[in-house]
Amino acid sequence: MRRWLIVFTSLLMVFVLAACGGGGGNGGGSGQADQLARGQEVYTAECAECHDQGVGPDVTSASAPFLTDFANAQELFSFTHDNMPMDAPGSLTDDQYYDVVAHMLQSAGVLPADTVVGPDTAAGITFGQ
Ligand code: HEC
Image (cartoon, rainbow, N blue to C red):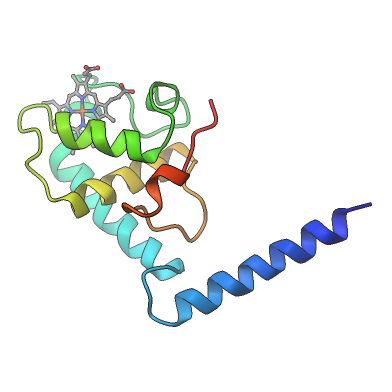
């Protein structure tokens, strides 16, 4: 039985993450909540007019094709940065692109807990398909 080891390791990670987030750094749960709120705003203002109207593919559910079209969140960021909004590619800041990527990941159910999506974390968020 190695279950106790998994439980212990999980608890340890929770404590480490909590310690990092509590220091006011760029990690932690509230950082993710803030990013998701911003990402939702970007999506509503810049993306929903097409992606919620069937003009663009579904990017906000567990069956979104981006989960198989891209290997990780950095690839999704690069594509989105270079091509979206389709009528004004590259018109947002990098931070806004990472925020809206976080929104898409969350909506598709693949955003890891307590992870803020950015240049340091995106490549590590893989879609596993
Ligand atoms: C003017 C309409 C329009 C707007 C606005 C728009 N998109 Fe798109 N989007 C499209 C279309 C059409 C496609 C399909 C293009 C293709 O496959 O080459 C697409 C494709 C995508 C894809 C690739 C999906 C996949 O699996 O291949 C992503 C991700 C995406 N859009 C995200 C966004 C985001 C995020 C925004 C807002 C910042 C946005 N789009 C705004 C029309 C739009």
